[in-house]
Image 1 (cartoon, rainbow, N blue to C red):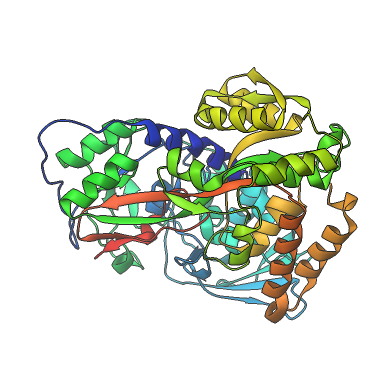
Image 2 (cartoon, rainbow, N blue to C red):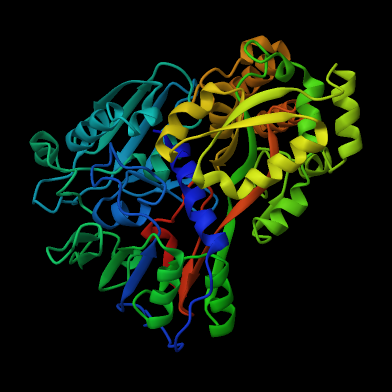
Length: 506
């Protein structure tokens, strides 16, 4: 699952949001939704795929959660909670997870949901191009009777239930899996079905399922989701009443304040420089800790957040989300802006006049390019920008020693350890942890720690990699949402757009 890839894509949304102008016209009140009333969502992006093995957990959340039920969901803190699995238990050796399944559930095509159906979906997800990351440590799935599934792991995996909960355990009808038609025709057991009146890429309408097992969790009827990429168009749709939930930019936040609508926001991703060659094997300067530290001191995160991010976020030097487990508040002042100290560190490392390098650039990230140009200029660093299209940026950026990044964060701190530090990802193909014995040892302490001690070990690792300037993080950016006064949204770190479970009547 390449969830973080969507996070970089959301930089597009961020850039558009920051640059969007206020919309004109007569202000009207959007349609209000009450229990049994309408829910009309303005999403930034179209659905990636109706096939859960190909979909992304980013903006696909509301789409997929309408038509599919997950085995496991998450609460507002990203902690796993029961759904189709009424109970989940991990063995004392952490190598087996046992799920007890809900009974009496049917898919929209009439097929029965049971352990055999669950195993079929899980095996399908394990083989998925995007969903497979969640199940990398799984040896096998086994149906034990009609209502129990046993998951045998090759090794301990403290991220499994979290990944399942944020969108990697949607259950699909067995016949639809066999038919290979899920990408266009979703067949699940969810609270809604996709209506034939939907227009792909423009508007999606959903029919409420009668007597759904969790009907109280989904009180809205009718339901519609509108993918509207342009921020101004979304804001206009909110003002006109076409939508009553909006993925918000600064203009939308001002509209909400003026109209008494609800605002929900939480940090979603970090902005800064991603280093891909910390050992200096391809680009010698980055192999020096003092150079990496200099690049942390040199960027004024508070000013960048204010001027580019409109203040929507938290100044931070760390990769663990603000307010979440693993985050150490004191680390946010470790690299308080100090250009003199940055220059001194570069000189101590042997680069008093800076150095030269190439970096990739795409339109998505141009909003931060002037900051880099100015900062590097102050340090004597000469950067040559290699311009490319966004899709080429995704592919090529990790081949450079560093690049401007907007990467999503996770609620689960072990997922942060694995994705940001330890395991290869598209944005960090060679983590080089083995080149840093102290970091490698700290990671192993996290992965083998008793649950009662794990957060302590994670905080120790966080302090270590921050001191080693594993990244140059300027700030953590918010995802923001607005809704009419009687709709409440609970943002979840790790989801770019909350699922329908996080949208409720207020």
